[in-house]
Amino acid sequence: RAGSIVGSGPVSNRDAALGYSCIAEQRCLETIADGAPSTPFMRFGDTIRLEMPDSSGRSVFGAIEQTVVRAGLAS
Image 1 (cartoon, rainbow, N blue to C red):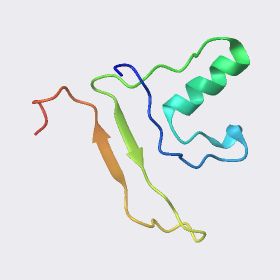
Image 2: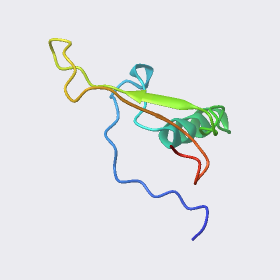
Image 3: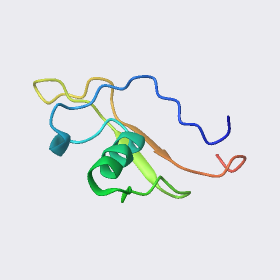
Image 4: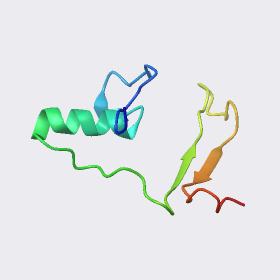
């Protein structure tokens, strides 16, 4: 139903200090620890960049960078 969060089972770091697999996971762990989330969801205009280096520091698939835009405004 509307408002539901569906996850596909992302793999997280064993140590949360190394980062999270998604914003929803981070917000859930903040809620468990502090009673409420402190990390906001992404907003229009925010940009995310993902890149995964191998053990030698070389990019495995290149960088993926996207900006959150309203539907119909993507170029």
